[in-house]
Length: 159
Image (cartoon, rainbow, N blue to C red; front, side, top):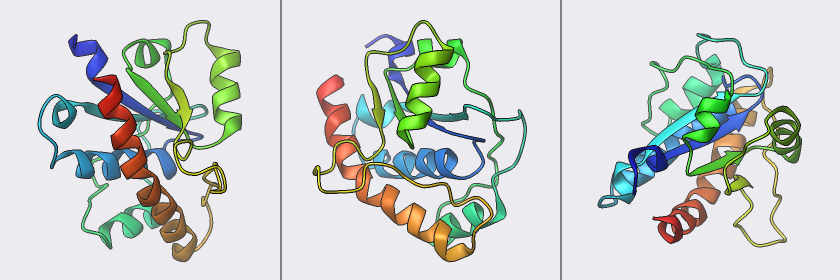
């Protein structure tokens, strides 16, 4: 697997709530996996992100409750280079996927919703908790945690 193929990208709107939480949750899950799965680089970005913003306080709190730190996170916008280097990209909503399709001429073959690999009866999108209370962030986190095993299983088919 070429080094550039060892990168996974999560995408949300501002890269301060959902995608950084997803990034850290998948990193945590993959720590237990042997290479090459355990060697994947997990990143996050936003379709409308300003560079350098910290994660929202409630995102930090929601992950801290499960023993994961977001203290070092700094937001970044989605770029063509980030997409080109990614083996797979996971969006939070269909709108994010449509924005990427409209904004970039070249996308990875694997452009999915984060919850796409759950049963069809499961909600496929992860709503934006920005500005909501801690409980909304915890619900967001939990919907991501639910999707992580299906993402790990999918990634095993790619590498």
